[in-house]
Structure formats: structure tokens, C-alpha cells
Amino acid sequence: MAIGVLLAGGVGQRVGLAMPKQLVEVAGKTIIEHSIAVFESAPEIDEIVVLMTPGYAGRIREIVDRGGYRKVTKIVEGGASRTETTWRALQALGTQECDVLLHDAVRPLVSPRIIAECVKALETHRAVNVAIPSSDTILAAAPTADGESIGAVLDRATLRRSQTPQCFRLSVIREAYERALADPDFDKQPATDDCGVLLRYLPEVPIHLVPGSERNIKITHPADLRIAELLFATQDAS
Image (tube, rainbow, N blue to C red; front, side, top):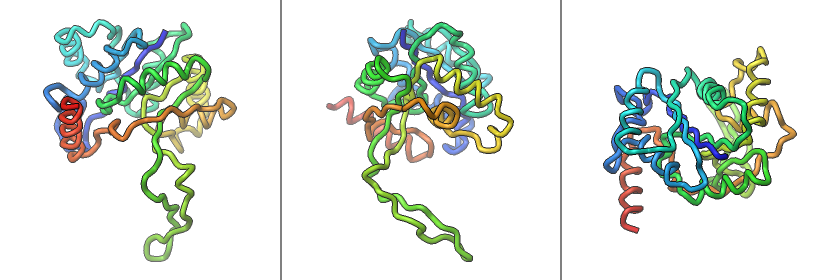
């Protein structure tokens, strides 16, 4: 069984809105509905679980009921951080082994191809991440008395920009999180994503990379809303 988990616990502060950014309309639907629709239509996905900003679960239920999204089985309130939200999702899934695809709900342009390749990769790998090559030169900054200077120019050939979904066998990511939450020093340097938790607490588990897409953008800043509109228009025209 493969379960798509949409992580939508944010409040949209960087977009400058009074409501969670996943409820903003882009190309005729809310951002989160676009994401639900992609996973709903993916034949590889059996169920969908939505983690939503506290206080907005009812809005998600309205979207699900109106859209007839039959694969959505649970709507759960998210936590105060990404890691807390993911842990609530893992708790909601129970203990029965399955494939879990953890996806940023504000990446509404994730493609069916990416989802299919992630599920396929989990047949032979216990952890999978979606990533794309960096088109920019990446610098390591070094502090100076009046700011920063270039400390090193990193080898772009080996660098990747991480996207989602990040995908795991449930037992693997659950064990990583159990170790993280038992570590009293975890909060001093919290991981920014789920692969980061796995790398820190189960480093012996390799994380296979699946090619992502430049279209699979994360809507974070106000300009991203306009970019997403244009990408959806291009998608509809193609």
C-alpha cells in the first residue's frame, strides 16, 4: 500500500496572508486542492492523509467533500514545526507497514511521473528523495569582520536541490523519528526535512534519488503565486 501524506501545517507568513497559503486560490482551485487532485488521480496511491493548520480541518473536509476525493481517509491537525507535523502524520498512519510519500502541500505542480517513479523506487529502496540538479554555482560563505566572503566554490556536478515527496517505508521513517524525539539535543539543531532526520539517526539507510522537475516549485513567497499561475496555464495549454 502507498499513502500520500500532504503536509499543510504552515500559516503562510512569508506570503503575507491572513490565512494559510495552501487555501489561496491558484488557477481556479486552492493550492491544497491541486495537490490532493494529483495524488487522487495517481493510480499508484491508495490513500491520502492531510495534515492541516490547526483550526482549518473543517475547510479541508469541505474541499474533499465537494471535490469527491475518495482517497482522503484522514485529516489531522499539524504541529508547530515540520518535524512535529510529520510525527503526527506517522502516528495517524498506525503501525501497519506501507510506503509513505511525504509531500509539501504547497507544491501543487508535482507531476504524476514523479509520484509513479517514487512508488516504483520504494520497491527496491527503503528511502527515496526527489531532487534536481543545481543550475546555479553554489558558494560556501566565510564570515569576515564586515560581512562575508567566499570560502569555497562547491562542485555543482554533485549538488542537488531537494524537493518533495520524500518517501519511505513506514517502519524506517518511524524509527528515525523515534530516535530523534528521544534525543534531548534534537531541538538544538532541528532537521529541516524528513530526509534530514533519517540521515542523522539512521545514516546506514541510503536515500535513493528520483529526478524531480523545475515545475515542482514550492509556493513560499508572493511572487511564487504568480509563477504558479503561469505554470498551470502552460500546463493546461500543453
